[in-house]
Length: 236
Image (tube, rainbow, N blue to C red; front, side):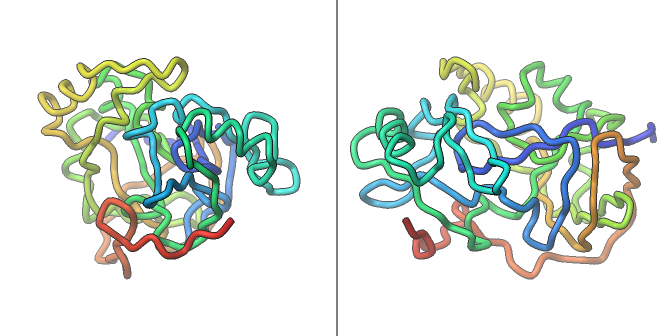
């Protein structure tokens, strides 16, 4: 095993918008604080980059007061509302959803440098929270059932993520390249990056060493949008 370390950290204050790069963060039992706490809603439920590609190009970050920002505007401002409707089509609006169901499956997604290098495309297409360096490309399928020990923090690895059309969207231009998803299907059997959750909280930083250890832990709840959680938690 190579020297495994954290090479990148990402938070997505607004689901389906661009992420913000971090140098360090707390890990809580709810994942990275402020991650995906706002999302885009439509007349009939959540809207994502799967069907509203332009959302993936919009910058979003956390302001110094902890409030998510959309293209330099507070998420709950009229300016942000206009931007979201322009990119998400008529009826698109921003809502707050701090519930655990705001995540697709679990509260962390971890990518590995070996698999990303084999993919041959920008890691941002995968929308991970943590990127690990020093991991062989063939190791991801063997990691479910293990855990990542990072200082005091412990992150469980549940499964490999089934990928969708979001990976085909360039995060800078919004242009679509369907060959990206075809490559994921051909090379990785459609699965890439790791569905993870926080077993033990702690502080983590870029360049922290990571130990891959055995684990018997299992998440209490596998919930979220992909597995069909109800749209019942969002507020304006």
